[in-house]
Length: 498
View 1: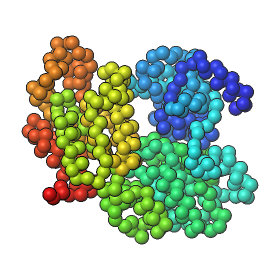
View 2 (view 1 turned 30 degrees about the horizontal axis):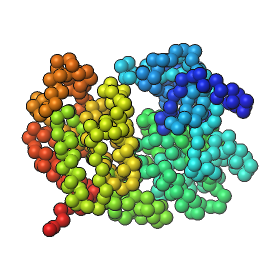
View 3 (view 1 turned 120 degrees about the horizontal axis):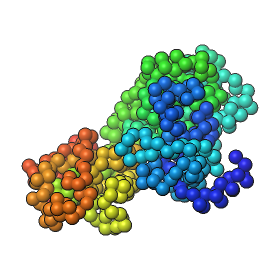
């Protein structure tokens, strides 16, 4: 895009609505703007999304494996119409692109979200402050390969640190085809067991001296996980082709079969590698408990980097996140747990009680589903910062909705432990404890959006601890949580002796 057009769009955007992009959407936008997603040039409309899901094709028949959509909350979409322009921005407000809405559609009826699609014009790429020289667009990579005289390159997308087996697979691939290697370190949002992207990148750089001189390039790829199974590998192959590679290393039999079936159409050769699904989770478990990484799996320089970046659990921060109906006992148990952790020592402990957070962080919010989500995200953000810095965060909101609880889990787990505690207490018991008379007012219709009466509570299926406080005293409940934290290694066993 010309500088004059960017200036024109920025000036016009003063009259437009804005969309603040999520981390996942920022990644998708960057890949659209740089051409990594070619032939896709904008977020998909409903027809393109449906043919992608059903046939792995765009409406014109071109191969494309995963939906790439721009979802926004229904409330934000309610003030938009087809024909409107919207400014796509980073959360800090920087405008990155302009989208002219051609279609607004619901990906999941009743899901609370609307997808926007239409022509997309880039203004600038998202800002990054790390590994500048390794954040290369497909055009920059192709130009670099050409200037170096490289004409046969194999790509290896990495969402985990490079293992010994992965290293050996790359050496075999290079030797078999007389190829050079592009290690693509995936940095977009991923699974909860994934190693942090910056750590993966440092691991890549640490192992480079083991390769022959001038045979490897390393680049970051801001690709999020699309939860698409083997189709993810097909997307990796398309991106590898767009980056100038003739081959892509693929792990897993189903993924290998899918990519191999489309080799001719892709113009990219599938090169098999051993599947090592356990690496991310298994390595994290060993690191968490302060155990040495097996030398058969990992080179010493990578092991050293991982141990430096992931201390054992007793040196990590963690969050205990309560959820349950009003009156279930969350605040009381959270306070007792806080005292027990302070008694044990070794960490700063912060309590984020639902009512106190409402008073000090969310006083302007009401109790609509949208405002409840905002409140829980704020709690999650504060807890993630406490966890990141080695503290213990105890959160005690109602948190009635599964989706936002999962968002909070994903926000915190990259930085330390996350323990979801579900207080599975019958509503009849909660009503008997209601000194403020809130349940009675809700049943009389005097309070709207009251969880358990006029607003749903979505029972968690992923709680680490479930407690029925109708059967357990607050002290017994807190003690059970302490025993769990001891078993998992977050706190040392036994209180100090007098």
